[in-house]
Length: 121
Image (cartoon, rainbow, N blue to C red; front, side):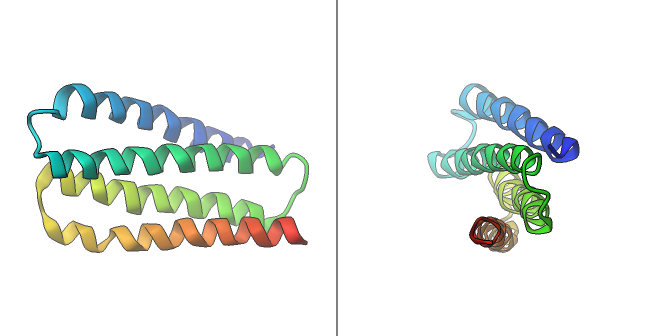
């Protein structure tokens, strides 16, 4: 098991739960419904990929594969870029931040592609 990715995944999941509660309890009524949906999308994708990081960390205990490790770090990068930009967009309203979001999506896709390749080897 990769302890660093395990820690990263656990912290990302912890933050996702906290941000989800923050969005549900503190942002409702303060943000427009559209911006609240943007924030919630960031939380949802963060949690999905926190779980993917945890699965990757555990898989590395069975198969020490560089592609798995890089995939886990791409999920981490995706959380920072994708979810982070959506949080910032929702909280600040600065629409230019939305230009960062697709880069995070590409990191997520690349991470999943590496997991596919690792599984097929």
